[in-house]
Length: 544
Image (tube, rainbow, N blue to C red; front, side, top):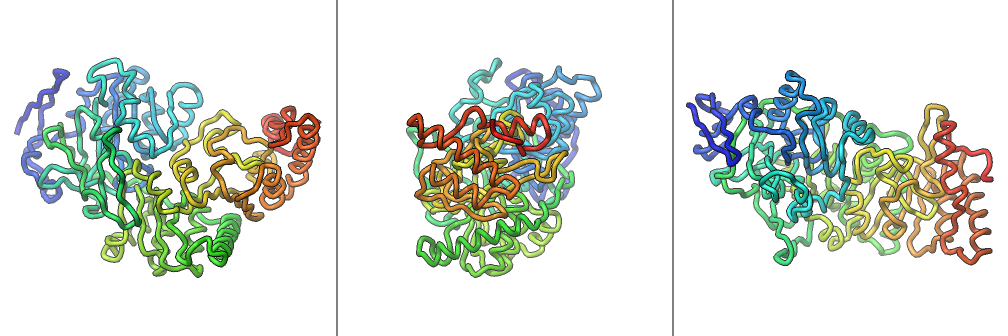
């Protein structure tokens, strides 16, 4: 079969695939689409320098989320033809994708612009060396801003109001030509909506995820309608992403294995943080500020999040629900304990063993789990009264938190969804170890500082700060009341006296000049950070 399909940019490809595999026939239920079968290398010549690309995906290194075949073929083409720096793309994904793709693109100098979140050493290096223009954004806002045309307004070639290509991994295509995503939804509906051409990689190696999704449309104002969700289990949309199948340019069968990884292991610190929180939840229930089933839970990723959810599996609370972005392995434990009734997320981030357990017990989970687009979240977070729990890099003594830029400048990954939840939740909680090691000192980095070197979450957003040292409940406290509580409850013992001396000096000076609402001494506010840069530790000898 040889099918030439014209493009508006006067490009075409010739299919060299005689017929679909049996596995692909089972997954693609619209036979007319088999006329658009392609190998990844057939499509490479159609991509041009400065193309604007949208990919499915949300959390890298995990199953059924991001395209692998065509991006790998493009990287092979750039590498074999020495096109590094001469074939660069503008890439937009719901969050991050696997490092075997994205980090390779960064090493080959294939990225010009990137938004809104990323994970990987090479892409981080490219951003911080000034080679990649990275735009950090709240993950719920990214899809709607894409639909508003904010990201394409500076595009230099037609179509000026659209991305050039959408590359999406799916597990199935329905009779209508609708797309069934894998283990994430992310921004895929909006990327498909705003792209000129669509390439679908149907991964026949992984199981079908059909039935796990709740896909709602993204209307722009003044036509936007409320999302009528009153419970994590509320279904308001479709089980597949609706598109006009005529917009599908090509279909690639993918059999690439999943690039999965294990979740961060728990530590004694993370277990202590979890215990402080579970005790706090019990006190809130006793005070009748929370129901006995708590309220829908949001938990970030990492070992602290694992410890909290794992601790809840052993705790006294029942009939729990989750309204979160990412589900990790410990949510399976919480399901299996009988204490978690239902969970909504936009992505699944299980380990290889976790996914196998999930597949083996599909019938136990499939009716207690929904995956949704990342853009529906803020409206529902406030309505449901979500309990939000996230890990920052550092928190200052007045409860401003830095989640993105080490020492104020070096981008790590991005704000992710933490701001979406912490700004809108009923209870906004940040948890962090009180200190981290540096090369020169086992407790060389204090995670409680006088003044955060970059602020992603303000004092107006946060209710509770937790470290392994203790929990600071800041609700109803003024800045001058908050600072001593944070220092006493959360700071590492090696930094407690140092931070209290900074606060008392600042308080004395600021009250004397009539500016004592939130006392700071600007001579010393970043002295701990500067000392770390110079000596490898935040333990300053003296403040003046």
